[in-house]
Length: 526
Image (cartoon, rainbow, N blue to C red; front, top):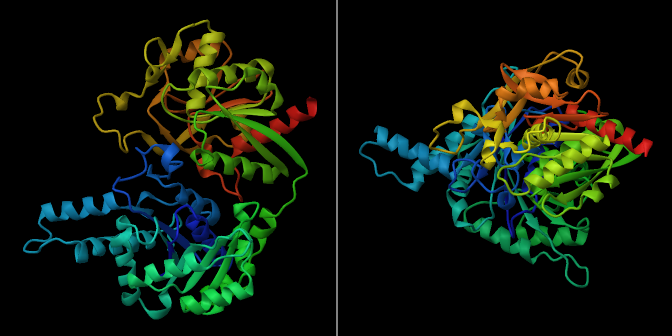
């Protein structure tokens, strides 16, 4: 197993995750099997109880792990499925070590950060790296992204652990990539001083960068690379530009041009087989049409719904349709605005704020024959809207929102729970699709597997009434409703699951493909 360690300096949010994913894609294009680990230095066990408006999207893995959004990028770039062991947090590490101490594993020892915490970190990395894929094979190379910024107190044990790894691994089984910011001044010149200070902070921890990736607005000139090379004590070929590009999926291609593959091959003693360029052809495919989709949400931060954005992009590429997204505040938008869009999407979420605005948008889409896609909460709200405005149950609502007629009810297994972390209906569940439905047309198969993250469901007591009134529940997991649709509508489809979590550039999600195609048809009829 070879390890590529990715650290970051100067400031957070530079794109370490995209850098790591791009490194993996470059290596995958050369035939290597890649896996990835994301280290998050926060004390939370996982990302499940965090506010997405502060931390970004909570991505859900196949085993139900609620993790950082970077693991979503890894899965999309690398065409792999990861498990919760691939997200290491301070909370997980300390809990495991404390459990071992209580069990008596360290009898006679004083349990300390070094070696006990750092040993556990290294063990967790190794176990994740060696975890088998579904076909029984193992990865050749493991990417390890250390979250946070060099100098953060929270990251110290993790940085010490990866420092120790260099001494424990053979010479060509370890490479460290440091991602830094290279800003421009008022004259437009790129400044290297922040990078110099970041490398200095790295060295003070005993870590040495083999490759520097400089985030910048435009490619770094040869002169600037020579300066970084001289001050940071590495070859000029090890200084890689990571300039801003129109689409994140183009980053691997730009890094190829910068010579990153050659630098990695040198440090890891890799063969350089013929490159599979199909990924680059896919992500540079030209669009022939454009549609505009309104996403009605209560969060004004796009990173909350990054998987939805990417799934729309994947579907658009498959159809040569550029999807422009307009974000509408569920509490403030005017209903008359909705007529301007080719399709309407209601994403998942929690809490009562903005609910009535979302229900209003669903009603507009249903009555105006505008393509509609509802996801998780969007599925539940389409049931509520239909119960109110078609069945005539004026007080129809969800048990989550308080008093009324609960056409959406708490899942039975959620009753009486005292802990909220990791207790929702999470991860992969199968569903059986009814013949002759839109769901069957989209998926083209009887059984599907999709990922979930919810506590509430369509109340079984009202299913027959809703179906008699025309709402079709087109897929089920045993007695649980997984999707709903209207056969008389051009495209009205909602899912209790999150199909965006399994969408890939090379394999777009079927509901998203159908939705984008319907948006194009709607635009042509306007």
